[in-house]
Length: 638
Image 1 (tube, one colour):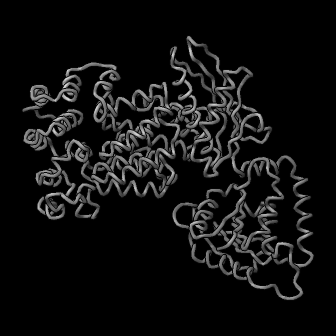
Image 2 (cartoon, rainbow, N blue to C red):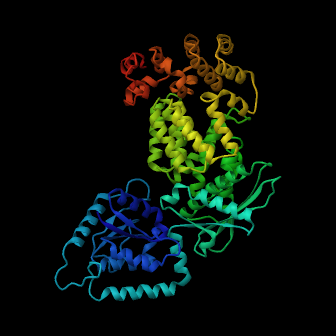
Image 3 (tube, rainbow, N blue to C red):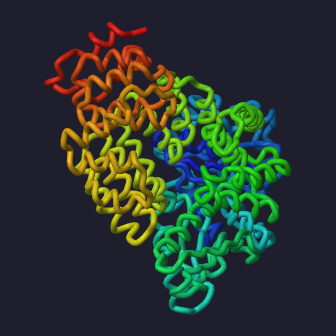
């Protein structure tokens, strides 16, 4: 496969990126200026990359026609016999490059499949084959074995050097904007506590997947010098009685303030303070880098956008409008700013999910979601958040359509932890528990600063009956989140259903008759205690999703099959479909062995899904299952 040098104007990054990714998927190694690390000797890096290239792919656009850099790189490719020109928006290549066959990408906006990709791959292959052939006698060869046209390369090198000297600081800024972003972490002062806070933040940000994938570079503040694009400065400004810290994000070029925040927790919760500091920093950093990729924002809008990102984990489901308001302000000023549109769709969907509570009008929430979806669709119909929003309008029994949309969203953005989290939940709903575990692990790998992601892995393993593995992951979380409220939540969730009920009782933080009845039956499952629990649900019908879930889980866990079947029969199809994920948890293991289970699956459309897709639930592969899933499903298909 070939080494490809991709030349383009920095304003065309949205076109260049999918071209590079498509060529990499085809097996080629693609170099473009975004691979340059902060502080690198840019001209030398470009020269080395051109020397190593088998093909120089040049993207001619109205912007690149005006770029001296692109013209020089194209000339180098032409003079070395490596040029593969592309054009967009009907552009004709400039004089000196029109004798080459140009691949016309038309008005392609950078979304979807790259037009004429096979033609491009074929052209690169031809150049690579020419490069591999022995050079004809009399032709000059560089020390690296790459053919040169006699006399031209030294002149081009001198011209490039002169251009660099003339460009001065402007040239440095241009390349820094297109090179690998450099992020620094510094202590705001010399106090040991502030130094410790900065060190902790540096380590935690270093765990993010984007660092390992080479999407940005993390450096400590002491060695960053002036090379950093973004700088976090943190200070411990509290005391043992009141843990408190500040965090600011600065533009590395001019030290201007992009975002700032103070964090405060009650005494004894220093670990919670550090956790929130790193989690918020990770969210704000991700948004700052997305903004940079999308062309940036004025400082006032950048502060609004980053504040919304910081609030997402804190306000979330409790106060979603606190997140929505700054996002709407950004979009009003910059209607095509995709990162804000994507996050607003996520918030809209959350508001629609909780409609009916806290006075939120469901129809109004859905209408607002539709309006914002249309705005997003006009900017980028391939936006993953738009794909996820479409799921809100699916029926509870639309299992296949929901999973198809999630597959589409995953293809649109394979590294989106939120998409993978939703996919985990959807896979559980159709009984594909092993696939759900894989999805949950992937989401946690992408979002290692979030205890929510760790909880997802632990509970998905537990729901699949893999309790030993769940306990191993729980032990990791106890080390990672020691002393935090997040760990308390993780332990509570696990021990409530699968661990020690006495630990769950201590961690509950509240008391209710229902909780007490359930935990008492778990601690001491005597007939009297079980009867007391079952009696709470006997003869009751409800459409409340939470109550349906509580009832059928408790009845299944204590093998009250007849009462369970009655509860399942009295719930509506949609009500039951909303909690279908419960049917594949360990408490239902015995009921799944009963053919009556397939009748329930048929009533809520699961049998149709399995028959249509051939994606059978994991339990159907048990060798001692007393019935054949396909045979039984056929009986109850609608």
